[in-house]
Every structure is written in structure tokens, then in C-alpha cells.
Image (tube, rainbow, N blue to C red; front, side, top):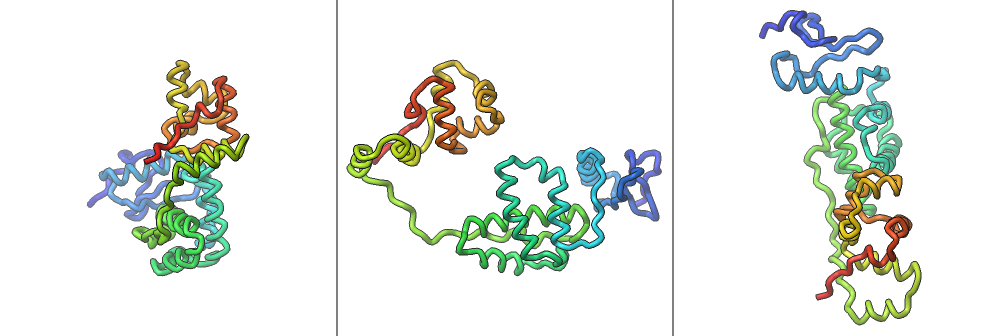
Length: 259
């Protein structure tokens, strides 16, 4: 297909030798993966390049795994992660740098990902998280044109063979409540609970989640995750919420129904 003339190409896009490139003064040139300037995929790629603010990327002389990690940490995708998620990612990224270091991403195979997962099977949560994070990392490598496919795509996560825990019988729950007090009892009630009543209390008091988020110094999304029971706040956070709402901490807990 004949490419469109330069005047009809988007800003900073040039046809050089029959190939489309993104070029901007003071920035490294980038060859488009999608070469059809009339396709939707081309404009998706163009938008992704432009959405990073046109900031210059560090040019790595060696396309090894250690540099891939460094490149990813500089990317907008990494910067958009929540702080808690970024902490979890950092543990995996540190592991990747020590485990793979000078290995080239383009030489990595699916079997290497499986070996990595299985080598950490004694820490199942970490093993599964390494698979999920390296999958994202390979997508970044593809964007950089450092490799052509994602060997971690489709790799299954480990499943626990431990039978599910059975709930405490009511007589043991009553006995523990009689014996425990203070923070120990609060921890017990929190673990026994399936959800908090934060949403109910806010509605009763006519308080908006955005107001509570400002009082806590947390993002609206974090407070909303508490309200929707997608995330459990820490005990310290529960005490702080109770103090802000002027209620007892127990009022924020909803007891599990014992069958």
C-alpha cells in the first residue's frame, strides 16, 4: 500500500525509506510497529507514544532484562500504579534483575517463565505474582521492539492444594470473646467479619466518601474500596475512621452469619 504524503501524516511522523517513524528534535527516533497509517491500530500506537507527554526515553545500549526493568520503571505505565501495587511490583522487579540480569528478553521462552514460577512454588502468592508482573514487563518489551511475543501470556497460576479452612463453631467464638479484650478482641472481630459497615454509617450520617477521603488523607479510590469491601483497612485506619465519624470501632464491623 502506498503511504500517504508527509503533509497528511500526524505530527512528528515521517516516512523514511518506506517505513514510518516517530521523530522529534531532542528525542530518540521510534519506528512504528504498525506501518499502515490508515489503520486504527496505527493511531492507537501513535496515541500511546504521544500520551507519554513526549518525554525523552533513556536509550539503552544493551537490550537485556536488567535494562528492561529500568526502562519499565521509567514508563508511564509504572508511574500510574498505586503506591501499594508499586511496592509489590518492586519486589518482583528486583527479583527479575537478580535472576535474569543480562539475559535478552527476545531469548526468553515459555519454559523459562514456567521454571521461574515453579522455582518459587513454596511461596505461591509470590510465584503467581511474578508471572503476572513479568507478563506486563514483556508487553513493555514488545512496545520497545525488544521482542516480538510475550512468553508469559497464557501461563497458568499455581493453585493451592490445601483444603479450605472451616469456620469456627459458635461456642469457640463465644469463648474467645470472653477471654480477649482490647486490640486482640478488635483484631478477632475484624478477622471474623466479612465486611465493614462503613457504607451504612456514612449514609446514616449523610457523609460523602470524598469528605472522608480528605479527612483520612487518602485517595477517593482507596476509601471507595473500603466502602465496597474490595479492600480491608488496617486496624489503625479503622480507629481513625471511627474517631472521625465519632463512633465506636465495633460499629464499623459486620459480623459473619454463622450457619
